[in-house]
Length: 143
Image 1 (cartoon, one colour):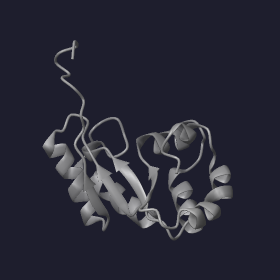
Image 2 (cartoon, helix red, strand yellow; image 1 turned 60 degrees about the vertical axis):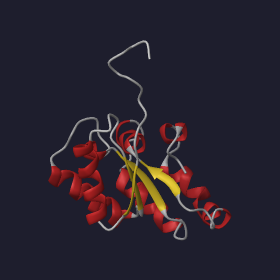
Image 3 (cartoon, one colour; image 1 turned 30 degrees about the vertical axis):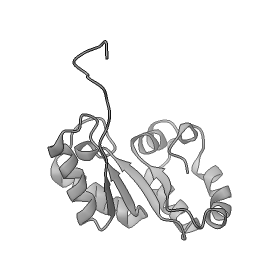
Image 4 (spheres, helix red, strand yellow; image 1 turned 180 degrees about the vertical axis):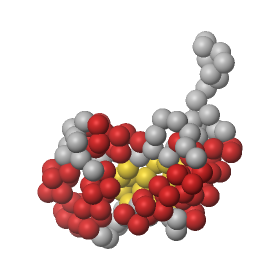
């Protein structure tokens, strides 16, 4: 899908043009990685599009393949920790708008932040994949 460099360059209308073909060609795929921090942020800041409308439109045109997103635990798709209720509401809306699978991580593997994302995605009705990050030893710049 578009959780890649394409996210910063392709507008929703361009993705919509290939969505139905994608639905057929990848109908046996486990999922499409659709969304995460970069795609949400870029849609608003650079493409001046609504990330929710983008997701809903692609979900409508690609009904047969589960959509997956990367959730930054307590950061949701942002760059800072958010209150618990914000993360829960975000996941509820993401699931309602078309996300089926939430792959949840915390960049520092801080369990409390990871747990919030897992709980929020699960209570929203999504399938949850917990993920650990390998970031190296951030205290030692030689490693």
